[in-house]
Length: 314
Ligand SMILES: NC(=O)c1ccc[n+]([C@@H]2O[C@H](COP(=O)([O-])OP(=O)(O)OC[C@H]3O[C@@H](n4cnc5c(N)ncnc54)[C@H](OP(=O)(O)O)[C@@H]3O)[C@@H](O)[C@H]2O)c1
Image (cartoon, rainbow, N blue to C red; front, side):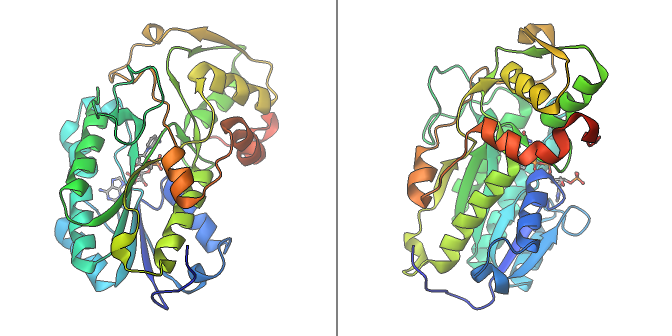
């Protein structure tokens, strides 16, 4: 990638900035871990109270009015089971709001980086999913994220869709924190072993997004040649939720025993893909990214809040 800056003071908008991924992006940028081009950015961190992305007029006037060059959409409706009972709200945030952001990005000639999910797949295939595989979501949440992807594809805006899976972070509520808390309270836990995927450390994903964002801002030739499109990002490796829980409990120092059970043991409102490993060759090759194994990232990133006497309760 080239070193030629296109604009002295690029504007970056992060929506959903109080969520897991949004908070990780904000922490990295605010701590100045990325030097160089990000020293001079105008950074706009918004959540629903500052910028409700379902409000089309507000979104368009915010993006155009603040000379935004890159929108990173971390806002989403992420309550997978609850979505089955309130599909309209879920669709408004995950389908209609990305369309609003795409319209705003198009009007401003900005790049929209949008986050999607492994739940756009039905999970019945035997191999890791690549970006061109057929979407076939089996839940309202998955359908809403699929509809958001389609809205971007039909918008005429410049976009990157990054699908990720099993996201966790020191910010917000997630599987890692729940298992660590339960392991501290109970002698035995039952966790499903027939859903296979890959955890994603939100800090790793945030770093990857900022590498891509930097490449975009430094792109030397016409922006038309930038490799827009769909990408997959999770940590490396493959595991079940059971394997993931065993590792969390081990790192927490708890003596709690984790037992493998079938998904039917925990009936849930939403159907989840049984196998949703994402193939990451495209993003690694295109942006020269190195992705850590999920076990390594869990150990490194969660060290400060996983040890048994330092569990952070949501
Ligand atoms: N979490 C996972 O395991 C997972 C897995 C695969 C893909 N993803 C995708 O990864 C992305 C980031 O997920 P995450 O876990 O970081 O999400 P998150 O922690 O649930 O954060 C989402 C944020 O969006 C905000 N939001 C909701 N509705 C909004 C609206 N109308 N306008 C503006 N902001 C709004 C939420 O604010 P409030 O809290 O105030 O509602 C929250 O701060 C999402 O696109 C998600 O679909 C997540």
